[in-house]
Length: 188
Image (tube, rainbow, N blue to C red; front, side):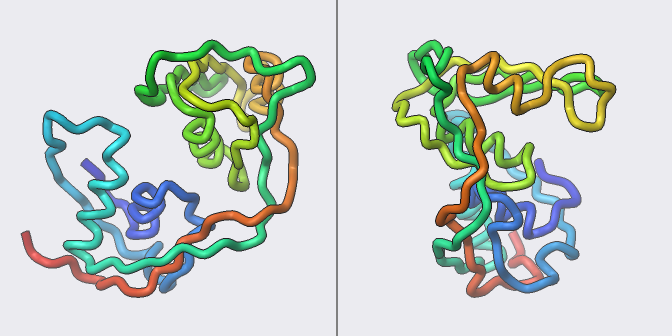
């Protein structure tokens, strides 16, 4: 269930990009919608974006195309000495918990999926350039910037706990251009 979200939020979730990577009409961020849907039992959380995109296409007549645009990004790369990651049998998603003083994430995901997660936490997209294929177990804990710093920053935690590093760079990034969308959804 999605409540009170803008179409920009929903397109961002469906296309797995940050809102700043979407261009379209200004009203995408101002109109709010509730979406009530039941996920079929045989579907996984990893399939939610595709199902959400299909819903947006059906109900809002969403039409998009992708472009590559030069943007400031963070590159996710191994530190000297290599990553401190354990292989996982399969990817099964990310879960986290957040308090005023700490954030913790536990995951079994590809590093491309982890980079997508980090993109939502940071001020720019994160691009996986680790060269590591497959799923990995990730346990990460840090103090958010708004908290009284009792633990490491996200950048320090990634380096110390995972053996990875985030470095600033400028590169081509996937952007989503909204070619058409209706303000009012079609009826059920």
